[in-house]
Amino acid sequence: QSALTQPASVSGSPGQSITISCTGTSSDVGSYNLVSWYQQHPGKAPKVMIYEVSKRPSGVSDRFSGSKSGNTASLTISGLQAEDEADYYCCSYAGSVYVFGTGTKVTVL
Amino acid sequence: QVTLRESGPALVKPTQTLTLTCTFSGFSLSTSGMCVSWIRQPPGKALEWLARIDWDDDKYYSTSLKTRLKISKDTSKNQVVLTMTDMDPVDTATYYCARIGGSSGWYSWFDPWGQGTLVTVSS
Image (cartoon, each protein chain N blue to C red):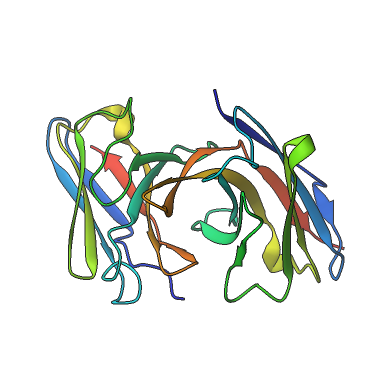
């Protein structure tokens, strides 16, 4: 099972919107609406931001939204804030196994 | 409140077997629908899923590592144990345990995570 493909880095100015893509295959992202997204600040454990493609856990800002089309899932952060600067990982269920993405570093300019 | 905490050796030698323990609170692994996974992250690299164990003792493993991994649970102690054999320097990573969230019988997201434990493989 190969890692899902994410851009290495994405940047934006405060207040802007950015989108992170997560490309898999018909065996993972394309087969299941079971994509989740994680935010990880340096030295910290990951935190779930989106699950089941577009659902937001309680306590997560509504500036974070998720979607999926075919084999590609996306995470959009609107109204970018300094605290959003972190690494982001997607993850897909792939039939009894899970595949993470390569990770994207988000920089707030 | 659900919490998880990983424990184990910080340093292991090549070819040795690693044993990690995840001690959790706030839920029981004997309750239907509860699942726990192990995930690792080499320094500066991406996350990698390793294994999952369910309330009914079903177990699932990473395809690439399944010959080296074993996951088990001790419900009375609220613990999940992961063993990884034949350790190599490339296995140096922070190892996390996490509860798996699910709905309608599909278990797909990891929340919450433990703080992680760094394991270095070196002679």
